[in-house]
Image (cartoon, one colour):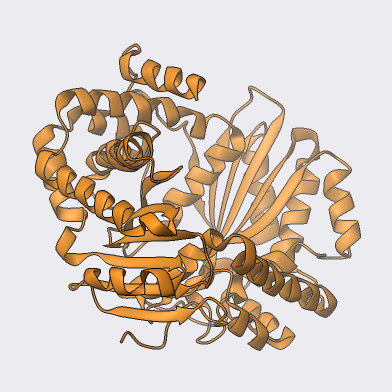
Length: 465
């Protein structure tokens, strides 16, 4: 605790921050099949980082089959090309490399980092994973069972891990953004091996692919190699779905997930937010840092330090291509559920009324610019950023002009952003996991309550009461 306070004090009173964080030069090449290459040489260490992104992700999961993209990303790592699961893992570990795949709402991504001397192997393994995955039925069954078991275990021991699935399902409703990326017990049970193979055929192809490579390599040789390996990959068989932006939820409502006997209540409070290309990102990040994005935030000070109601309280901004969410997240003892929620709402009111003064803005700038540069230091982190920009239709100004935008933000522009993005007490959506018998009547004051049992195999309630 003492060390954390000293760090926080240093961030508040330390030297002036630097705004000159920029991306290195890189080359963008679009191949005839639609694959986009993003290449940047970085010769300070003998490493190469790669980020391959297939547009799509959990938002393209077929109706009733949530978790399909995530399960595919897992099974892709269990053998590809001529290697079975063990042989594939040994090929990576044998040269000290790292290689993994993951899925989120809008993409399936492969991340790799190898020594520059092993770059040929890295490209071979990534190509096999993307274009020639084994998709073994045995591995599929094993990973599907494991995913279901993890959900069941979380319901018993750590339901906070499931809060994103409950919250997004309630906030986004039937929109694709409400699909739990990891699926639910019900949807995972419905998935078949044929489903995963069909999904791969429908949504994987050269027209969906972004490959970013940063590190110790020759640019022309890398361009030629990647063009040779990926340039002939056929387009995906199915069209990408076009998603409309979900509308703001206009009236308060409550989802209560009943976990009988729970000694704590976990809660998320918020609403629909903004998309990744929101133009006043700097103002929004400054506001969120002060409100609930750091240890010395308004929420932490009120709920933990002064109120003693929780160990952690924070606010979070999730931003996707079409929209996102803005939420307050915390937990408290069952007996103090209403006290903690009411206090969090009062802090949100204070944010709207008072905004940020110049002293808070300065400290938030220092904090952000202390955290931001390390996210762009390594070859792998730079590859990740380049792929992220391409996937979301953003250019290098997203990084290069961020420091200047932070510098130009004022109390007025930040207050305008808060008013535009943060919900007020009159339009909050509440998602709670706790002992319904103890809190059911009390939380009804926040809005109409939809109640489901934590034993239900789905995260999305059928309809609000």
